[in-house]
Image 1 (cartoon, rainbow, N blue to C red):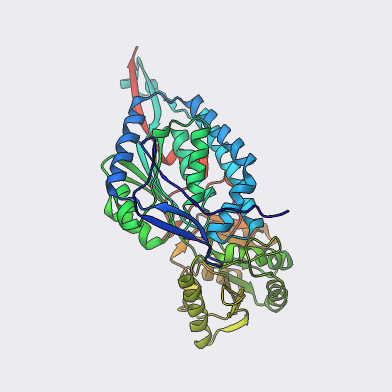
Image 2 (tube, rainbow, N blue to C red):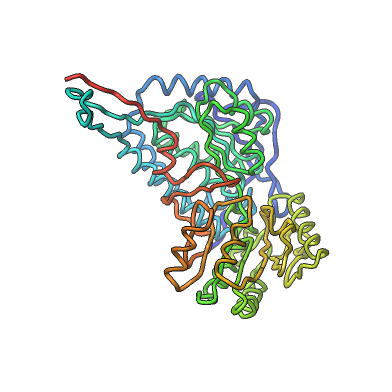
Length: 481
């Protein structure tokens, strides 16, 4: 299958029903070879004012009922399916994501929108048994779920289409208008998705897309008096900083991780090694739940390591537009250099680089890297590396393995391979993570499941059914009979 070509194009901001240029432009360039992908205008706080005010007026008008919201989301899903190749090519070009992986993201976006439509149709409250207490006799109690208000959404670069859909779909399903700031490195996918939603029938004042810097556009969205809820995916320092800045607002955070994979002596270590080959290095490891810390029982560690390293050395690294490529570039040269520096620091401290660790493809990419025996203080162990690097450590008892997995300030997903159901239940009880996946890698996610973390990994759950709850609030209504 040939990769569709994306021609460099100027895009406009989507504000208050207008397509806006500001006279200043940001260039979007390929992380792989630096070719120009697009130009987008630089937004500012004044555009956020216009967008937030228009979103507020649209929402309080109350003329966009549930059935219409559901119909728009379903139709948008159909359009995304029809344009899957174009959208995948856009993701590939601006994010450097291998085209075969970008197609999966476009396909998942269809699911996210469809699941959001389902939630729009079934959004409801509950009744309260008022006469269960003597003082409530003669009354009827209803708990309504009402929209939270204008939502400010800030999305990351690594899933520039589907994570935007996870922001927009549930917010719209819940009846909230949205002001979106997509990642500066990958704004084009977000703009295209917004235009698809308009084409599907979304009133344009219900969604506004403004590109620009975090200090200008992001801060203005977060602090604007009209935004009552903020949904943010990105780094932990930025996310918790947002929450500290606006403690009076609803702030939903989906942040980072150092995802552990525990492989016990009774587990299917062969399958674990084969899955880890893909899920430690997909999109060059730039996923919040990319496998980073592999923790293997000493009885199977050598066999696992041999198979895993052999698998990793078979990965194809290079041009993301090539159908054969498994691992492409990091999002920027700065990130590439940072990750290599962390690898070199671990090696100088005594960890063993089993494969990778060097720049390849004329320096464009970092080779998929496996490090054995990192120290607990090495950044490749204790910080989110967000690059094509996995570490291997060993343990003696299952309890020790779980303790090593918990040795993290993050708690998003953990994976455990074991054939003992008791061990599986123990892992579910002990591991301090938002998701514990038994006989699966921590990188696994379907778009309908609850997804989110604890500790520094965040405070929310995404997945349309769960995000809709986060973006509505309960309102009690009582009626006297």
